Image 1 (cartoon, rainbow, N blue to C red):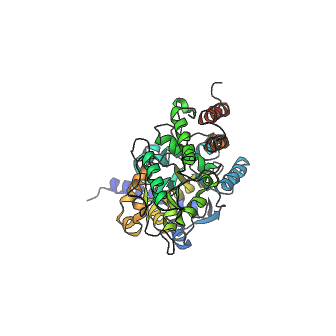
Image 2 (cartoon, rainbow, N blue to C red):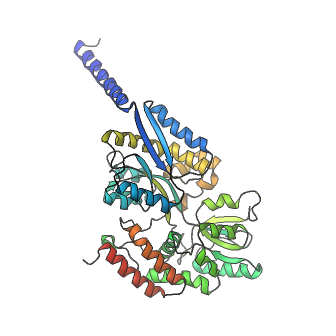
Image 3 (cartoon, rainbow, N blue to C red):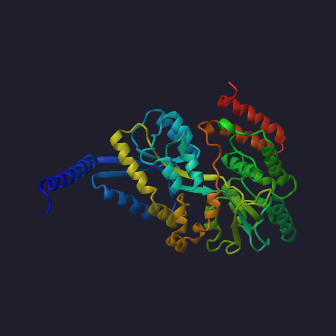
Length: 422
């Protein structure tokens, strides 16, 4: 028998709970959320269904999606202009892995630590993406999908993937001798952000670090000099063609996919292109971690996008925006983006999902490489200093300046821009 006062207490709690839910639903009713994102490049239906799932769970909400230019630089410029101007006409935005500290320091994106505590992110997501979104101990974005630099190699021209830089050079030169007209190693050497990714991978491969104590960007170091010397040496020793100084991702991919190179550094997207019907290298390509001096698996540069909330939106819209981010970064959403758009999941557990292994074994096989992905210097000044890095790195690779001179100049300029020594 339920005592009268206990029954009243239980009934009261139920009514309060229902009232809270009804109040929450009423607050959501008529709400409009705007998501700014870059195209995923694939069939539109799976992403539409993912968005429809959110609207079904929040029937009073109208979800509006607005695509940005595919160029990262153009998207960054759009956000600089709109967020600095106090725009509040969009709620959730995508942020490149190097933008989050910059936007957080400027006060343009909201602190999401209450909804997404850093400790929980570290439990559920891979280390590299978490390092990129947690700034000064607070969460400012949630990883959506990631990218990582990898090494492609021709399985018909070399015995296996090289583990060291010395092996890469030896394998490349031996293959070139057997296959006239084939280049050794193509990568991104043009003066742009892709070159910085290649330089940092070489820096880590020589045992270096991107940041020192106090967050200082480390450039003029022994590992840095060895890294730039290695990249310059690829050209002078004939391992890489001089033309790589004008290569971005697509230029390198086209040369490799046409069967005119033994090795290529690129992102995972190039795999599906290489395996398309009619590709001259279909079935003749392997992929592996980048080599290092020591022979341990290398560290690819972390790329990818995160979801953040515009700091200008109201508290009510912020809560709703956080729910949308939770929906779009869930394990199920990770799976949708991996299977239908070849976007690498930032959640570690998704790589063990049987559905991923069956539908996209290639994505599942990337786990070791994405676990070792490292971000470029996590600093709010990165976009300010990137022009300096690109200019000096390019000068060293082209032989205009020695690695010592280029890194010395870069260190002075970057220290000045970041206020070091003041």
